[in-house]
Image (spheres, rainbow, N blue to C red):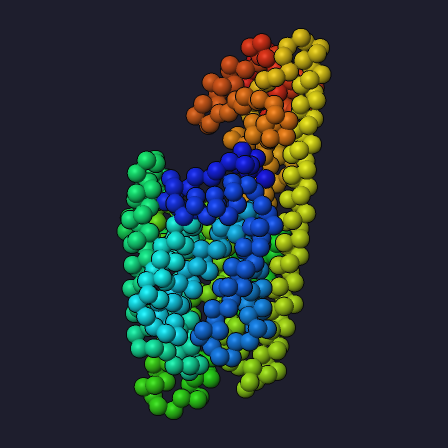
Length: 462
């Protein structure tokens, strides 16, 4: 909603160590917003992620892949991203590239150095597009551990080591390339590494885990995500009991139980590894694939349980659909409806301001263009900030001039302030009410000033 300034413009992400983003956005999107193209890439990426489980379990059928894709897509932050037009494709594509790159490193049918090298290059490219999802190739280590615990299929010797070394090599290659890309850029605060103190604070903060696994988003109950997590714990318990009963040799039983619990912990924490090691971290929407690890665990265990306990497997799948997928889909429809209403409201508000400015210009004899806008709708926003992307163009100062430029070709000079400068800025402006109240368009320095918020500091003194 606040991306008006980016329409038709190149989006340079090198300052955030994302040279791959600049390349892919220019080549695929031609510097234009394409929601359809973005959603298409996102959909293919989600199914690409789900399909990787077929490498680790022969029991995964196309139906299980579809269920897993839906479970991955049903996380609140990922559903929210479908309102982020083109960007969702560039958020999810790196994860698929990284995961299949890891498969090439350790599990290719014909293991060859070229396969390993291709996997390294895919990881480096994925990290260069978007780091929070580009490193997820390391997640195949958890999938292999789970497959070994459930005895689903044999794996090449030291496949996990080739993957670990390959992902590390790809990350290092990405880091060197990003240093070159950053040579002419100002370092962004998100690119620095965390100190040991910050790392420990993040690692031990319950709020960090609640952010993903008990996500609290307005318009949505936390119950579906809670039920989803409970099913994960139930399946972990079922798998534990199943291994304990089926494996008679004590050493082998302990080994497989260790692999099972390692896989559960590793896949649970997978979305957060990069967040832990960076100084600041990323917006909430960067955890859009928070379901990837847990959902993969759930589906692989359900597929293993189904031949032995078909009723139990079907019951849990039904519970996932009714108690998780359906409520999440309802949330997505609410977000979509509000996103459309908000965009239309913004366009109508821009049209109304332009019309009123033109009328006031004729009355006062002042020019209708350019005019000035003061403040934002942050303090009198009609729509609450209900999602990570659901905010008005008039709520953020950088997008206000852009919406007028894109819709009407009108130049608007925006007067912004920060907390430290608010008093001084307000003292230099005339008294005015908040638009659309009477007295919200006033003369100022031989131009017209539209106040998106009232200027009570001057008004009360007058």
